[in-house]
Image (tube, rainbow, N blue to C red):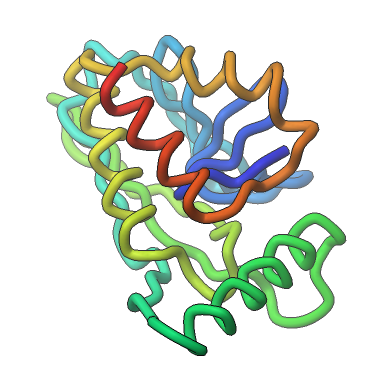
Amino acid sequence: MAMVGLFWITETSVYVGAEPAGYGKGVRLTADGVEALGTEQEGRWAWADVRSVGVHYAPVRRRASGWKALGNAVGTAIDVADVILGGAGAPPPVFEVHVETGDGTTELDAYGAAPRGYTESEYELSVTLLQRFVAGIADVSALLEWGRTHVVEGTLAREEREALLRGWLEA
């Protein structure tokens, strides 16, 4: 599994936020559309029926420079290790994913995979990619294919994650 922006990618699935465990809430993206997961959430929407996918209240960190950036890099590594090892403190942050169709908007909860928050650039690139999925300009299959061959590497450095997101946006 690997975190790339707002996406948690496994060998078989792509999630917005962390992969839910058990009855945990989450949002899965497939080549066909969006799927609600967990208790008290339900729904499955084909991309053709989705007008927009919005992400609200996701924890986003401000950019830092110099020594702060080094501290943020170390903090990110700790966050990823914490998620992978099951966490040992406060529960992960929860944010909302709004799926808008012709029938209205459904608000879903997803757990954040980055307890200290996502970087601004990864958040912005991820939201743009979600809108390209909706518009049919980008395809979730590219993330799934990457996951099948690369998730064993784990979560990459920020620069590599951003490069992946940019590449998926340009594909």
